[in-house]
Structure formats: C-alpha cells, structure tokens
Length: 355
Ligand code: ATP
Ligand code: MG
Image (tube, rainbow, N blue to C red; front, side):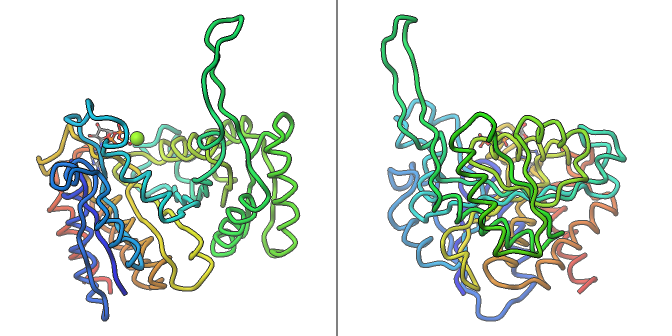
C-alpha cells in the first residue's frame, strides 16, 4: 500500500507531521510513504501549486493525506497559480466526487459548541456532500440586462451523478445508524426533483436503510434545533457546503474535524481517497506550535478505515484522540496550552497504552 502525504502550507506541515507519527506508531506492515509538494510551497519550488510529479504521486497512491493550502503572499498571483488550485485540481483530476464529513460531539467539550450542552452531546452525524457538480460547475456568466449587469449560474444534476453520490451515502449509512436523510429543495428546483426521484428509486437496493427527505431550509433549522435526529445526510454541492460547515460549528473547534473525499474507486474494496482536516492553512498561527493536530490525526483514521480497510486501527486512533481530550490535553483552540507536538505525543502514548 502506498500513502502520499501532501503537507502543503501554513500549519499543514505541522499537523500532518503529527498524523505521520501516529501512523508510524501503528507500525503497519507493507506501507510505503511518499511526500509531495502542493500549494504555495509547490509554487515556490516548482512554479505551480499542483506540479505534475505531485499529481503522478497521487495517482500512484492508494490514499492521500492532505494538510492545507493557502498563503497570503500568493494573493497577487493569477487564479490558476494560487495555492487553492492544488486541492481543486486534485479533486477534479482524481474524480473525487464525494465529500464525507463526520461531525460528532466529544464528551466534555460541549461548552465549545454553538449549541446548548445537552443538544451538542447528541450530535453524531455524517454529511455526504456531492463535490463535482451543481451550480459550482454549471454554465455561468455575465450579461447586460435592462436592470444592469446580470450574472447567472446554472444548477444541474443528472441521474448518473445523483446515483453515484447516493450509492456512497447509502453505503455509509449502512455502516452507521442505517438512517439516511436526503436534503434538497424539491418543491422549487428541477434539479432537486430529479435528485429526490433518483434517491427514492435507489432506496430499493438498500432495504435496510430508512430513508427520509428534507427541504434544505428545514434541514438547516433542524440541524441547530435537534441535530440528534440525523444519522447520515446526503446532499448536493451547494447545500452540502453550507450544511457541513454548519454541522462543524455545532461540534466546536475547527481543529477537531476531519474529512474524506472519495472517487469512483470507492466502489471497490481497498479504495482510493483523499483525507484532510476541514480547517485551512491558518497563517495566523503557522510556525508557532499552536495548531491542533487532532483534525489531521482523525483524517488519518478515516484513511485507515476507507482506503486501507483497517477498521480496528482507525477505531484505535479515534479512541486515543477521545482519550487525550478526556484527559484535558487541549491546545489553544480549546482554551489549553498544549503545543502541536505535545498533543501528538499524548495521542501516540494513548494509542500505545490502549492497543
Ligand atoms: P480556508 O480558506 O483554507 O478554508 P479559512 O480562511 O477558512 O481557510 P482557516 O485556515 O481554517 O481559515 O483558519 C480559521 C481560524 O481557525 C484561524 O483563526 C485559525 O488560526 C484557526 N484554526 C484553523 N485550524 C486550526 C487548528 N488546527 N488549530 C487551531 N486553530 C486553528
Ligand atoms: Mg474555510
């Protein structure tokens, strides 16, 4: 098995270094690690945020662990050379159409949530967001109109696109609480009508999964009112962008949450994916040992589970993280003083004691 690690910019290298230590501590047989450049660091070294050799490394790997990209010093560059192009390029080149973002409350950290503690405690959900379609990728432009300049962005989904993301979501729901909520706006949008009808059609293949449907406005309200009702949510690119950020605010610090982006090969066992924290490069705290590496370590746990089929090790890493949080090993984002490497030390130590 080959794992490509792309640390990137800002706190990316600091947090992926801790994830790598955790991976080393697991001492898995037959694993080869490669490191590649992405983002501003790649632009400076190779003249492009996603160099051809990095893309080749990703294609040859079974999984990618991604840090973060972004750097203020690149603000004047043309769009195609900006660090952010690295992640967008990887998603499209590797056909990563499904973004999985688990959001679960951590015991003892309820005070960090934007919700009341007893409500925060009840959150344990997964947002499955479509990543390659919708209004972001439709025909768009600007024209003159009688009302001045007019912009438009076409929203579209075809049945094949809905089917492939729904498959990922139904399968994910099977591995969780077997409940799937499909979020759309089918009372107004044609896209959503096709979406809903296709998801209903597919439900026949997953009789164990209890499916329901929710309009996105109601889903946004329910998510803050009673998030405990959700198990797995599947939705399009635009609605998923908004709902997954909302779900993360319900849990607490941005330094705690991981994500996986999966592609066609997800349909097979031992499947390719790209794993990254939901946070960005955090230039304001970079290089100071203040970054919380938990999101990167939990991204590694998702990698172990989805791409390496190592459920037991994935659970071990998650337990170790929960353990150090229960012990009160907090970084600055959680009101504590532990440094990035001290949090990494504690996770490795916990992992070795519980396994
Ligand atoms: P992007 O556009 O790449 O998503 P962003 O503008 O959303 O980036 P982040 O880089 O995610 O911003 O940072 C948002 C805030 O959260 C910053 O104040 C940053 O310091 C803080 N932050 C982000 N990640 C962490 C972390 N792992 N540990 C501690 N604080 C963090
Ligand atoms: Mg952001």
